[in-house]
Image 1: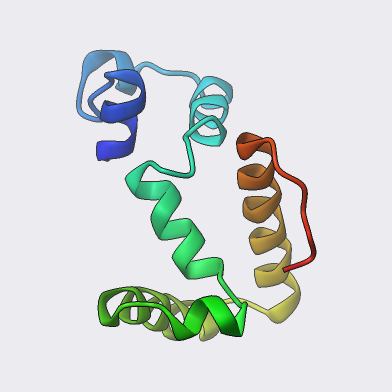
Image 2 (image 1 turned 45 degrees about the vertical axis):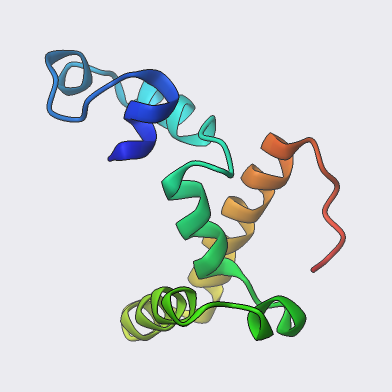
Length: 102
């Protein structure tokens, strides 16, 4: 996962990563910037604003479509919305921004 390497200098297959406690991993994961590779993917997958979606590249549309098609089969609407809200709040918090409901 290049996000961990770029943000923290930690390789996923390293001894340090393999011995990492779950709580520490969660803290590092939630601390990833919205500009990290994973952060950008999460933002693409969670985007619902029609104005933003209109400007997506074909690659971004494919990422979002693939994710929605894969997850829609396996996740209830309530569970999906709960996870997306958590991720959205995490990135809003990381950016120091305010959730404008979008």
